[in-house]
Length: 352
Image 1 (cartoon, rainbow, N blue to C red):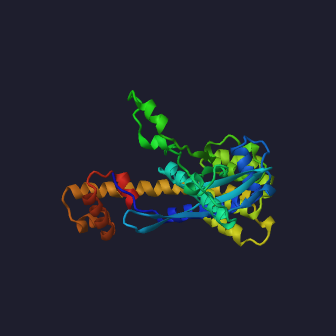
Image 2 (cartoon, rainbow, N blue to C red):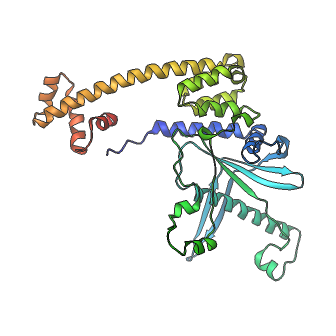
Image 3 (cartoon, rainbow, N blue to C red):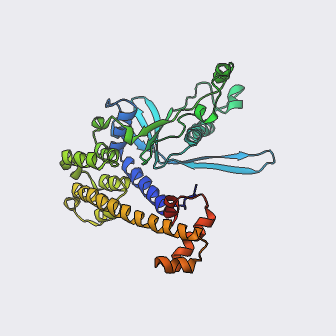
């Protein structure tokens, strides 16, 4: 099996998607909509004016056995404080364009850092108010009456591939369920489950009240051009009425950076015909697919011919003359033959 080169364009694309999703969800109305659908099953429990944006960085300083200080610091995507009357909650969104196989541990650390920061602020409050803590209160730096604010983290996944990573800490541990003592161990072993929201698997589009409905709808049907076309045809007016941030996020998520640039450069909202852009995207995709197939077929044919001549122990110059190919191209293919002797014509073509 041939290892693929690191795709820097892919890395940039994911970073761009994360950026636009962060902007999209930092809007309080959209974030409230996101929480109402995915936490409260569509009930309008959380109002936008009851949300306040929180700093997205948290960290602690730990001292090891040798007295060396080390800082553990993490940055979330979007974090807000939600008010439900006299009740408060911290709600966060982690935006993922790629599967993360350590997500359970990563999110558990984020939540733990948030709780640690809350403890630190409680300690500060006691010091500022001159509270004299004694006994267990002094030892803990917090009192029995002190309370933490719950932290809820949602993982929003919009990658092209199905999420095949662990969804809990237990899944990462590979616990042997057949061992007769497993149940007893689990009673002493806390689990941590991630709250995964996979846009492509979502069946809740109609529950969204903001532009998230159509941003997520475009992403959901992006891999099936017929369904994407049908979705844009049915919702054409609503999609075109979306604000600039929503259009930019949608185009970034479906991988249309060139059209995204046009959207960003346009000066008026009415110039941003999203559905026309998607119509062009579908047509371009069909043409690109046909051309890519032809070119890939030609590439594999050339590689196959070179392989046959190479097996006859002909030199690169001889093969180039026989097949009327550039000798540097032939040398590159032969080098791959040597580097990956078990590589198929498809794999060699993919590596060129």
